[in-house]
Image (tube, rainbow, N blue to C red; front, side):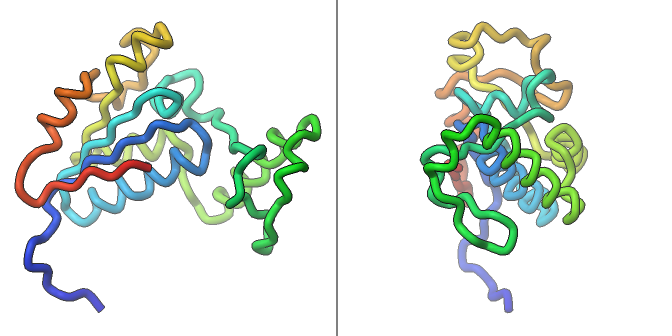
Length: 167
């Protein structure tokens, strides 16, 4: 049951710095939920999180299998980290996760970005990450609003009722 908040959230600013399926989708689900609730939403993709907004990579993300203690198989059983060293395990696990998401009608990354921007959310790429990995504006999805420095992101993220979330 929802209760009235004394200080409602007016704006969320979500930073995604990792490019694994589970990290990118955490950002997209939270961002889309904020947009649907009428909350001003800014998503900032930096470092490996940029994979989510790079056209040729966005719908080909993989899940991390080595060192991922949260990785679970269907039915909720934890997958032993050691299995991650087996050749092809990352591809298999990614395929399995994408299949489970498809059963739940979870859209691919590109469609999620479209939904978020159509609802008024803004998508930003990090200037430092873009420069480090030699990406250009042409590499980015058409749903990316702009490329910001960290300082510009903080300036955008300010204001009463604003939250910064790091996924």
